[in-house]
Amino acid sequence: MDLHKHAEPRDTAPRVSELRASDADRDRFADILREALAEGRLTADEHSERVEGVLHARTVGELEVFVRDLPAAHRGPAAPACAPLPPHPAPGALPVEADASVVAVFSSATRRGRWRAGRRLHAYAVFGSVEIDLSEALFEYQQVVVRAVSVFGDVQIRVPENVSLRGAGGGVLGNFDVSPLDSADPDAPVVHVDGWAVLGNVEARPKRGRRVADILERVQDKVDRKLRRHLDR
Image (tube, rainbow, N blue to C red; front, side, top):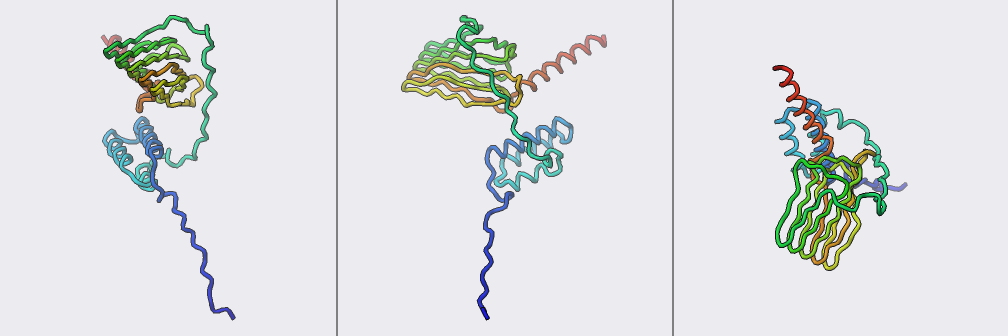
């Protein structure tokens, strides 16, 4: 008779709720809260308070507390559906002349706010800095090419977070950094950043919290309010 009992193997793997939360996890839960605010399920104060909690949460379980009473938190995970991007416009497909040029020579230049992006943009920084902010721009075309050249300078490009972003270029003793971005919407604008950084810096990234649809909806709301005021006279 064996008097020795064999120890049962114990599962030491942590539960999902005990895992450390990543920045991607916090962004996902913040998106759920933003959707709930837009649907009227949360007040502005509730949304602000919960977002603050999400930003300071350390584990996945702590994140779940802030959305457990929201329907979106109980939906099955949606499969990613990134549409294939259209190819980079072939040479000659776009006009040679730029729709807009931003140049800084021993100075700084900025293009931001509500403006029409066009199909081709040029940005040149020579011992200077250029900022091109497309986060509130009007996209009249699906494909936009930004030609960025930096010589002992800095070119910063920002795009809405729900467009697609691609880059093709390099650096010569410099930095050429384009963060690829894929939109799930097949009709979303695609921004191609081409160019070189020679002893300088070219950087393109999405701007958190800026979305093309959100911007257009706000503009439409303003137009509708103005129209209603005009009709009420």
